[in-house]
Image 1 (cartoon, rainbow, N blue to C red):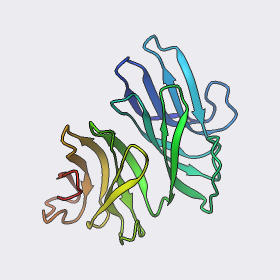
Image 2 (cartoon, rainbow, N blue to C red):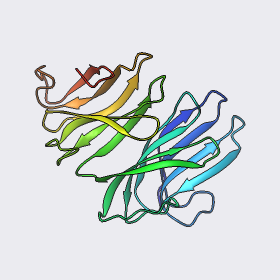
Image 3 (cartoon, one colour):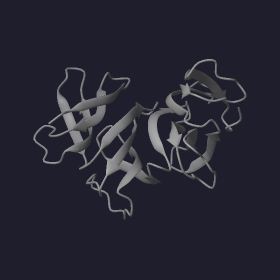
Image 4 (cartoon, rainbow, N blue to C red):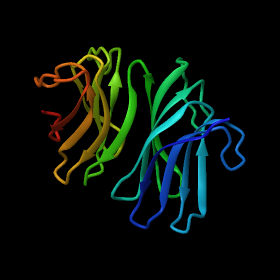
Length: 212
């Protein structure tokens, strides 16, 4: 068996939050996505785990809440009660520092949205990036970079698809004004900038309304 750590975040009290994939975490039966909290002395506080695929990104907001994203397989066992019709799908979770779940969203098949990173602004709006290869939120895409904004209650504010075939957003941060900066790679023209190599990195900025 193999275990993978994909992302790590830290809060203002130096607690650590890890996500990734593991065949067996702290004696839990299921192999799959995990979210683990450690305190500053590296003593485990709690573990959340589901039965398939990978936790891709984790972030702690200014209130100490944890948002993480998971590309999952089968039906999952993160104590939620929702119906899944896809074999592979993408989930968004929000937990408080005690490991209590606030909300979750099923973003549909990974063909619609494979999420790779998450961040928040000073108002605890959440921003996600990754890529989509099918339609998302009434927008068409063909392996394009996508950015999503949710408010602190879990209501989607907007979705931006950047039309650049086979591009992918890998990292995202937000400044104090709610502007977001996204980086990744693209093999094609990206926001009117031409590619000079086989695949080029990109850095792009959007304001709090989703305007480039």
